[in-house]
Image (cartoon, rainbow, N blue to C red; front, side, top):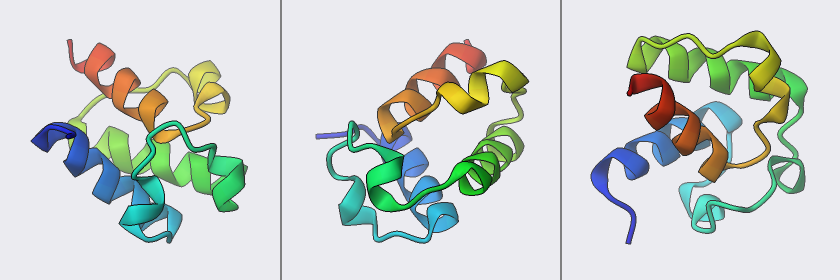
Length: 79
C-alpha cells in the first residue's frame, strides 16, 4: 500500500503522462510500455520540480524510466 506522498506523485505522473492512475499500480512498469516518450518524461520532470520545489539534474532525467524512480528521486532531492 503506497503512502500518501507516493500516491500524490503517482497521481501527478498519471496526469502529466495522460494515463490512468491504475496503469501505475505497479510502480516499476516502464514508461515506454505506457507510451511515455522523452518529451513526456521532460514534462513529468518539470511538473515534479515545480510541485516539490526541487531541481532534477539534467543528466538524471533520461535515467528516469518508471514511477518508482521518480518517487526515489523526489525523496532523495527533498532530503
